[in-house]
Length: 222
Image 1 (cartoon, rainbow, N blue to C red):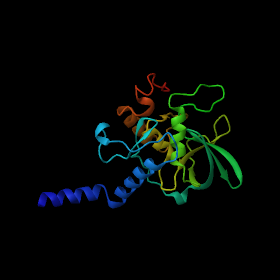
Image 2 (cartoon, rainbow, N blue to C red):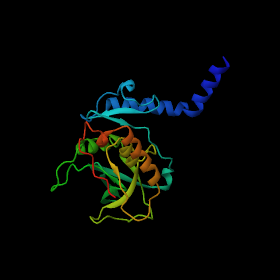
Image 3 (cartoon, rainbow, N blue to C red):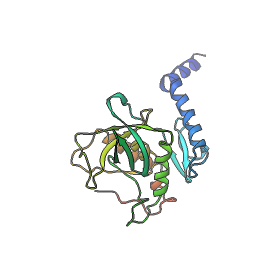
Image 4 (tube, rainbow, N blue to C red):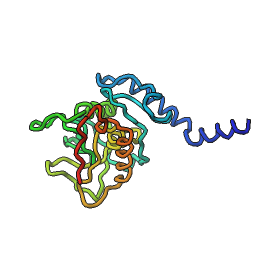
């Protein structure tokens, strides 16, 4: 009896009710997403992932959605989401000004570039980001002073957070649908978390790191 009580206490301390409820909501969301590339939640026994991971499947690719970043949204810039362009780019309305935003340090496979071929899982990456933002009319942007304000194409460089505090870039990396790339000499605020999320996806061979989905692995910047 004592051992059962201890086990119950440990589980509730590590995984509080709010976390369990959020996991159930995510499983329900993954199963019910309108995107045709998203299917039912997976049988976790066949994935090699623990019961504590939030799992889904994007175009036949196993994704681990158990990534989160603690952030105070009230300190961020609140903007209106216009649309998802591709797996690492969105358009937003900032005080009546339409801006294109590139997710900082996240490089998803190409899917809409006019002079480049569609990359492996490029469309799936875009669909995944679309699914994350399917019910997000308001999102939150964060600027990192260690990074440039805009890229060479004039796009704003920002971390993008959903209304529940999740980092969209971190979700993509954890799902194996983008690479973590540093485009400045100085690491950004979340670089260590991004590296960890990418490493986890590589170890589990998720998304672009799966030899079955993408026989030729993406080239990683030096």
